[in-house]
Each structure stands twice: as structure tokens, then as C-alpha cells.
Amino acid sequence: MTTTDNTVYNGMPASNLGEQGWECPWSGPNGGQCVETKQLADGRIALRQSTDPAGPALIYTPQEMAAFVAGVKRGLADHLMAG
Image 1 (tube, one colour):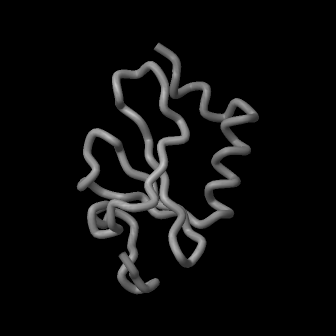
Image 2 (cartoon, one colour; image 1 turned 180 degrees about the vertical axis):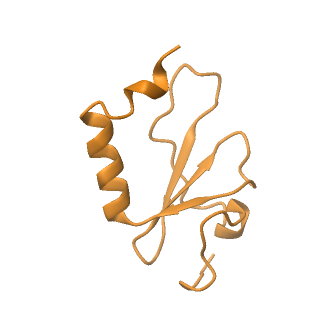
Image 3 (cartoon, rainbow, N blue to C red; image 1 turned 180 degrees about the horizontal axis):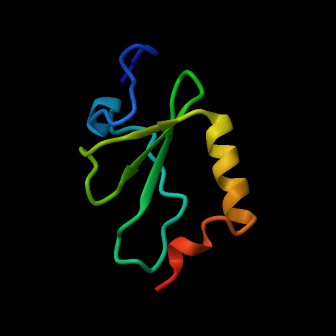
């Protein structure tokens, strides 16, 4: 599916981004509950929940994703796993 920058927005239905190109880089033994990613034509990255492929897509710039991954590697998200 081809979209323009004006039609891709944070929280849009992931199904509007088409079904091709979604990847599941963080899959594991979690019962099929994965985060799926898709590289968009303008370089941004879309994320969706694999169990709700028509649900909302979160849209991030490459810089935002790099900052998130760097923070996770530094342990800044460890508190999310407490319990």
C-alpha cells in the first residue's frame, strides 16, 4: 500500500498500512504475542501488536527508535519488567 506523509499518523489502524512488509523481530516463546515492525517508505517505523493486526499502529522516526533501543540497552526500561 502506498501512503503519503499526510496519511500516516500515530495511532492509525495498522491495516491501513497494508499486510505486506510486517516483520516480527522480537518473537519468542510468548504464545504468539509479538510486536511487529514495518519500515515505511519515508523511513519511519510502524509498530503493531501481532494479536491485533488491524489495531492501532505506533509510528516512530528512526531517531526515536534508536533512542528507545539505546535506553533499553542502558537498562532504562528495566522497571517495566518488575513484578
